[in-house]
Amino acid sequence: MVVKVIPIAEQRYPDRPAVIPDVLETPTGLLSDTLSRPLRDLRISVTDRCNFRCVYCMPKEVFDKDYAFLPQSSLLTFEEITRIARHFVAHGVNKIRLTGGEPLLRKNIEKLIEMLAMLRTPGGTPLDLTLTTNGSLLARKAQSLKDAGLTRVTVSLDSLDETVFQRMNDVDFPVAEVLHGIDVAQQVGLGPIKVNMVVKGGMNDQEIVPMARYFKDTPVILRFIEYMDVGASNGWKLDEVIPSAEVVRRISAEMPLVETQSNYTGETAARWRYRDGGGEIGVIASVTQAFCGDCTRARLSTEGRVYTCLFASAGHDLRSLLRNGHSDAEVESAIAHLWRQRGDRYSQLRTINTEGLAQARRKVEMSYIGG
Ligand code: SAM
Ligand code: SF4
Ligand code: SF4
Image (cartoon, rainbow, N blue to C red; front, side):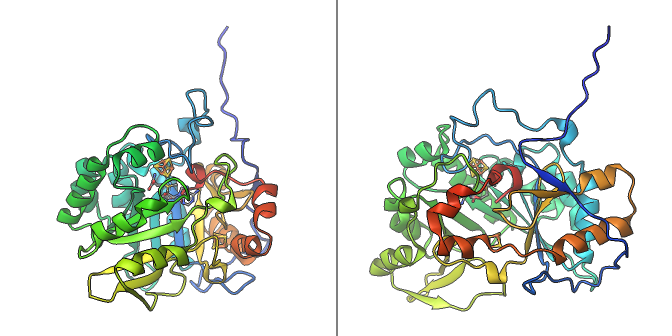
């Protein structure tokens, strides 16, 4: 007897079908949600797998050898990703970030970058096409990523201290290889490089000043991210969050900083520059100073669900529209429909009711929808 295995839809995270409205809507690039926020950025998760087990993201106890990652058949193909991205661009997206999991683990990622690099905004401008990586494969891949059309890269690095870094990535990955990746990316023209450091109190906060010192007077822009209550597996506690104001205070005590203007509306990082001209840093106060009011970001999961907030508990399934043969006009209208209904402002609400809210809601993992 031949046993046929039928892949079932991913049931760990609830989804809702994307709704095609009765009256189809031609994209104008002027879409806005219930809080008048336009749609400008799309983060695309290209894999839910990772070769790190960062304690704040994919803790080993949960993401162990028995963890069921998505089967290949669930993943959007490059053609599907590009088609969805094209529809988002028609609605006003001008910035795409590839993420994951670890995006450089997705086979032939350069091919996808080539396809996305061909997209143009309705005004004919190329997209800002970036990628966030843990840096482990960057030295090897930087040149081919650049050749494929990637504009810039953001690298995550939580410490310069070998013991602390390895405790955080939990797979004994060495600091030097990430630093080498950053250098190579810089050399091939993927700069200005941003380095993201998640600050977890009691774990790596003693590394704030050494990291700032290391990247000062270089073209690299270091950004400090407040440890967030994403997902349900990292055991988040408010007292492990080091407020961005404290980060700025600690650095400024040794290397004085002055606040500067943000580059654009919706920028997540507050920018600070060194008073002596030694470059700039950014702080992302996602917990202590919610920036939901300017949030213009949608996220596309590895298997084609659109999340209108990092903390949303359900995604809108676009993959089934594509796989059931719906037209471009129908998919574009479904995207318009879901964005028009968007009212998410989780971080603002969390500010009002911190830990209760953080624990009460069922949330998706960051490795599933991407940071
Ligand atoms: N693997 C890639 C990486 O680490 O850069 C891309 C995916 S990762 C989910 C994207 C970003 O989310 C990283 O900069 C990571 O440090 C950040 N991140 C993950 N979990 C977080 C948390 N609980 N709080 C704040 N940032 C987090
Ligand atoms: Fe992997 Fe990035 Fe999550 Fe670390 S933060 S476990 S590198 S996906
Ligand atoms: Fe945007 Fe949601 Fe984060 Fe607020 S909590 S900034 S709406 S992703």
